[in-house]
Image (cartoon, rainbow, N blue to C red; front, side, top):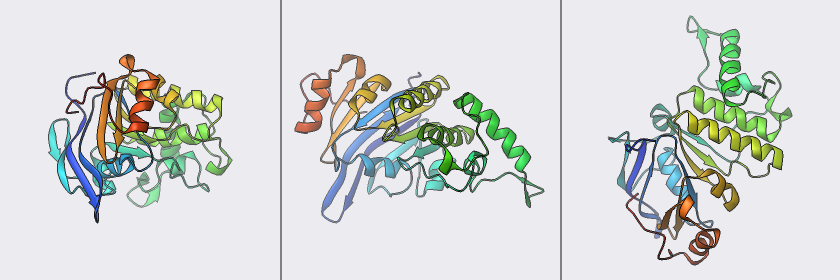
Length: 254
């Protein structure tokens, strides 16, 4: 990892009417780093990542990519800046295969007119082999694939389009032990490629296994930040439940 974060959210806030969903929150992710974002439902996690993903505008604050201020006003802006979001639903078209889903909306065409299926299949095979060498079923509809295979497609899509940061929302929800282990392998491969990851999960064991740092939110604010190696499960659960940090959980700017 380098000292320069890939992405920084600095003092960002968002309100909906009289409800302050996110209140003066800062968050940074370095290359090859996994940051676990934790908190109860309503803590502000989803609103925070929606601002980074371009789905919600900021009321105040700043987003920087590799140290440069950027304006993210739409999901397309976020994607163009290398920010990809893998939601719990995965946003896959069930009737399309891995190739169709990987290039959905960004298809490769010949002479700007006709779909280049052969080229897309070749590119999909290469990127999927990098992400999950065991996944070779590229031509079956997504509805026929396992949860782990569907995750592989979503992650391969992000990697193919040069994601610098991937937001993963509950990546192991509803997966069995084998597929959960497979997703964890995918995260390790992404880290090795220098991709920064924001991991949102209610499974504290997954977060302890995968995250380098943890950020806990409650009531729209950050209530604790701690390096995973220095944290205990009791400490993190206390912050989540009580909505305040223990003395050992230092509240640093990022």
